[in-house]
Length: 70
Image (tube, rainbow, N blue to C red; front, side):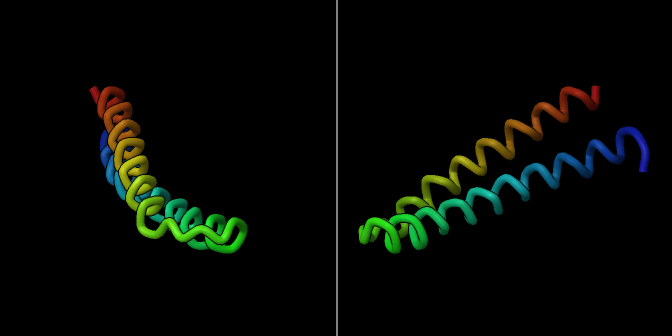
């Protein structure tokens, strides 16, 4: 793949990757960090918070790649 096709594929990967990374970090925050280390049950608040952080970062990276597409 070359040029514009590769950048278009990267945009999709940025969106999906940001969301998946946010969900994984949120799950790890809720289950492993808060429950195992501090004995505090925060589920699903960390998951929701980091999901939105992942969506925002995915769109931010996608917009940056869209600017490069022009």
